[in-house]
Length: 118
Image (cartoon, rainbow, N blue to C red; front, side):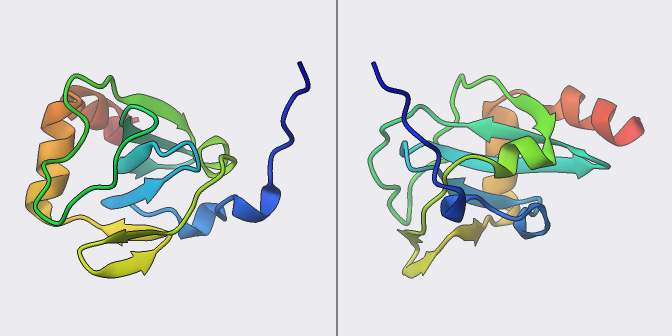
């Protein structure tokens, strides 16, 4: 089976990644960036092949383990613009309540504290 080439034009620049933002990969996996420090970030990933989020949807990270990775590694996935709450963009800022929900759903509170203490 032939390996599919990555499309670098769909990669993010590390400077585009922000805490509290929601991103969507081309595999239709939502990713919420929960914390960043130095070269590392913690994010919550949804399942792949998700249906589009509706404006009133709960965050899609229930029982999803949080991930810690380098910011550059996070950026080197293929992302796409998506429509959420009436806006089409590559990233969408979460409200404080949505961010808290994503942290709670992925059980990342201790991991975030550890990262920020490094």
